[in-house]
Image (cartoon, rainbow, N blue to C red; front, side):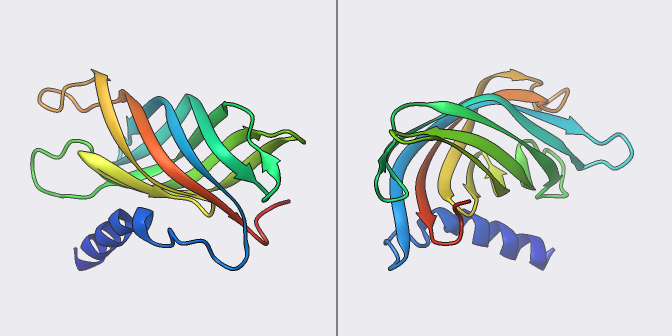
Length: 171
């Protein structure tokens, strides 16, 4: 239980860590991400399941690799696993998750595909982190599920993030 609380507190604070550029920063952008997130509970193990994002859109304003102007929106998808953050009754959209995201950033020089690990915490509103993105998000109606008679299995989400590309991340 203490480990879950520490992970929850750590992930919620991640969007605010490292907001100052590092000496090795290779580009920065402000991004919005929106789309559909689906939660598929595991029938064999209550409180766990699989999440997927898609279709989604990422729209960033700024520079990629310090010199490439980002020119418009790109696609955003992802998947992974989640676990309920609280073991008490009434948990709904209180989860800790990990997985992978795959997104496209179009620039003046190239279309850049980024695949990276993704961690999130969700407790009403949420926070997430990847090696390049740090931000917060909300799961908004319309929902499939109501948190009272059945769990939420599909919803719309909206996120705001700071993207920082650093040396070693670009392929």
